[in-house]
Image (cartoon, rainbow, N blue to C red; front, side):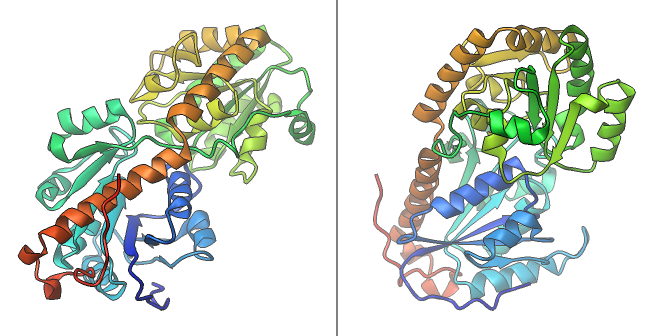
Length: 402
């Protein structure tokens, strides 16, 4: 655990984001964009990874304090005193857990014991792997806010997970619309060995069971029989990579399916696509959809979670019932055969993201919520003796935001 960074004594709010690790994934990428976007004059973000920092954590460590290796195994109870010491030493004012499971439990429990002023839990999906267990439900009274990433997701947290509706807030996922922008994908196609005129379908998701890449590949095999010059791009990595590559060969599409692994050039790869697919069993508001739509790439996605708030049928893409192979194939084939429809849906998708799902709006949502919660606690500090607080009550200036 690296906690040797110098502690600054400024009046910014020190915010600790707690998660398991930071591989290349949707929620982790969102966190990178969030902490980079926070107003440096008002907030000092830090990252605590219970396990390894992962590629994105190592990258962020060059920009801000990143702490890791706090949890050696699932039953390592020493994680609690380690987290408590870290929060006190870093003079943390607000703690935000990212996702459910162990980080949500240990993070909030440590925050309570360290007497932190503000405790927030951000969830990014519905069901596994973000289902809320009994132990995590017990800590609900100690949590100031729960964040859903879309309206339907926030409703799920209140109605299905049972969190108090007054504590549930919606902060839409957001993407950098200047980075994920429309453009010519011909150079990237050439680099990847994809013909300029080949109908190209992609998927951007970690290679994990809940993303259901098996359906994507089964559909790709059927699409390829109808469109023999079609190509398929899989962006992302994960434990199922070898298994999925073998499946692609068994389905006869190994030579036309490109497994790209994790990429630093995702915006350029997206521009090389005609259509992006998402075949997940469950989601909340996947960032890959927002990135594609911002790049004017229409989306065909399973109708799960809050996906229907961004994939609008016949406007920004098409929805299909989760697991319905025939519907998935039909929608993808229709779009791949119709460049004019791709263009119309792509433009509508970008307009929607620019208006409602921008990175600036997401960052502002977190800044406003954390500041308001802190200000409220500061105003009632007579009930929270400063000497008992892990934060800096009495030394920080907290002004209301609008």
